[in-house]
Length: 243
Figure 1: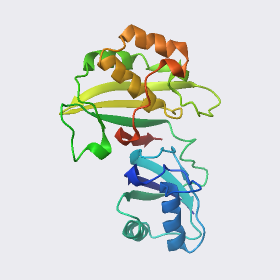
Figure 2: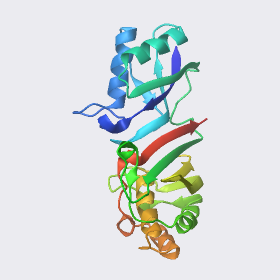
Figure 3: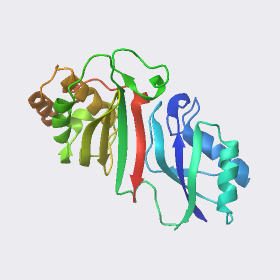
Figure 4: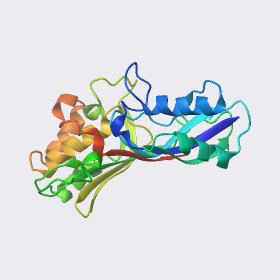
């Protein structure tokens, strides 16, 4: 039997999603609990591998169970054993051919910037603190340039192993929510560190270090060294995966 999990996690205490030789990971923690409950080794597939410190509100994972499950009871058992920073929102049966990564039509990420003169004790784990003013209008003008099918080599991680830097972005917008600037981006798939590198460069626009024309030139250069810094991971959330 093939099952799909919708899960949320706080990535603060994990070395990312994917199992690593050392350090706790979300995948490793989830697989250990699934294996314990089902009394057999369980491996999971995932819609998108998040990096160390990155959070998820709508991650999707699948696994094979050796027998049919009582879904409500199984979800309750998972949540009672998993640590409090991982939560299963829903579980459903899917076809054996369903793949959480390859069947996804798009993924939506959100990045939160805490933008006021003094830091927040509460939001520090879930945002990038920037105390100086940021020009939202200029940042939005630059963000809109990313919509469409483009070469995103300027924003890929130096350790990216993707076959092609071309990606299709359907939404790229910045909104202000109280003391937050929130960047939302939706694409079919993303390069490693792509969102955080975009955010770091958009912040350069917001603080006046880059004009929107210069941002466009950075984007067109297809050269990571031209772009801004890699924004810290704690502000990034995988919000949703659309099928």
